[in-house]
Length: 138
Image 1 (cartoon, rainbow, N blue to C red):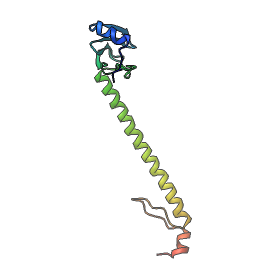
Image 2 (cartoon, rainbow, N blue to C red):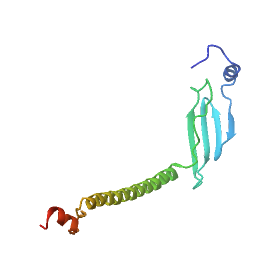
Image 3 (cartoon, one colour):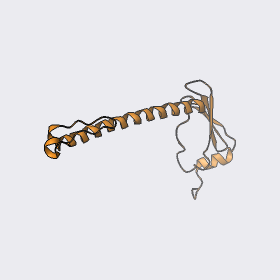
Image 4 (tube, helix red, strand yellow):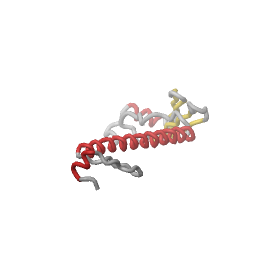
């Protein structure tokens, strides 16, 4: 959104349309010209070049901090995502196994309270004394 009045910055931009500004970033350098910011740096893992371009011409009404610049190249970023996806699936599998163990523990405890044998797939149920008292020996 443009201001209804011209500021000194707007005046300076009109008088110097091809001005080039550069400053260091954490893993590279940022250059700004013609309404764009261009980041050039090196991947922090493998050292391959990383470049990104952002349009800042629409942000003439305030701060233009539009997020961080990339520290990793596309290949390293994808490898990191894949690694964390595998970790997440491994953690999810372990959580589900723990939940099943807990459900089995609770279910068997409830069945024992009522004198029923525990239920396990593929395991023959033992008949306990409370079951015989309640339902008879069948």
